[in-house]
Image (cartoon, rainbow, N blue to C red; front, side, top):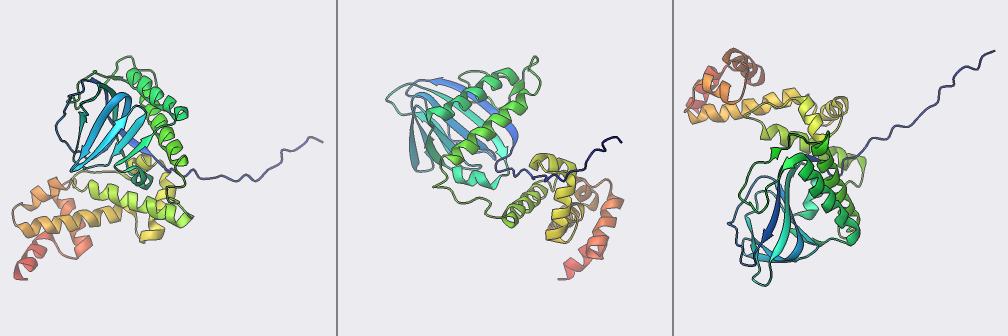
Length: 297
């Protein structure tokens, strides 16, 4: 009698994304004089500044943070800041900017860390892979667009993301006594995911983002995110998204500046007829009926 294969029960552990990088924005390699003074700027993404040699200052509003060799500083999104020399020595610096929706990044916001030697290898890996993936121009801090290298090895941009994520996680581990328990239980983790989904939807009212794109950004499966969203919010992601857009449409109608066709286009509905149909489904009124009722109020 032949041995029949046995069926074993395996436990599948879901991977919790403590930190997930969604986009690489810029990579700068700077070798600057001690009197270097860049203009104040702010942007809607994170910036990581690492001092490889010498000393430099990061100025945030009225705060000045002095950085020396081996220090890294994280500037949170929309924080006005500038990089300058501290008049005492020339400096070499790496600036890497990226986007992330991970709540764990709040721990790094506007903070300086001295990187232990065991973690500095990650900086080298990030920069080396950056040179593989992109055409990085030295000493040009005003450049705002990275060009892909035509001969970039397969997966090079993904490798940059992986190295940054590893570096940040290892830095978190080394500061566990200073950082809160980011996801103390399953419910906290799921709440974080729901907030991340809602944030992505709110950020894309004037464009379109699909459920698949959300899942790709957050690195979870469509089934998992869809089921969890329905569990916590009582509706589907697409229905919630349409409700957000219609709420914004009502705000635009109240301003009495745009036509219904313009509003439909601005909020990226397929056509005015579909916009009207969704508007009525959400509000039980057509846009015209809402406009008339709002003018009476």
